[in-house]
Length: 147
Picture 1 (cartoon, rainbow, N blue to C red):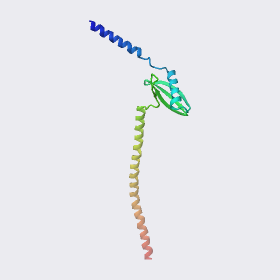
Picture 2 (tube, one colour; picture 1 turned 180 degrees about the vertical axis):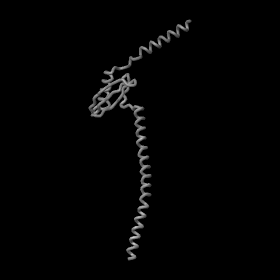
Picture 3 (cartoon, rainbow, N blue to C red; picture 1 turned 90 degrees about the vertical axis):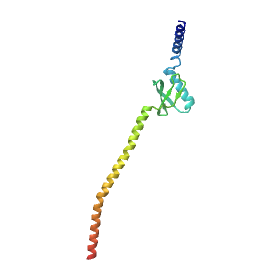
Picture 4 (cartoon, rainbow, N blue to C red; picture 1 turned 135 degrees about the vertical axis):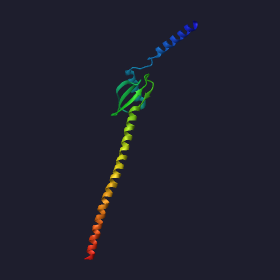
């Protein structure tokens, strides 16, 4: 019985400790904006003109849309405001772009194969007519020599 009480007490203390720390280190959107603005202005790009256009929660991080001298950039900040990620790579988007790139890269090969085949067919079609032209020239030359 004493073991059950001790285990239950330790469990309650552990749960209480977890709930006390949960959310305590998370900064607000406004704080995240201020932290990001200060960090970029003083450390990353002190001489550049930047403006934070938007900040939202995304996938457990703050997604910060920054206008850096006319160029829009997405950066990220950890929920506690301690880690700044200058750029995030969206895996799904990059995989889609890679697939599109590979598909486009494969298209010219198919077109090249078709073009080569078409050229071969065209040259075969031209060869007989060239032979006829050569024979006609030879016949004309023979007739001129005979005269």
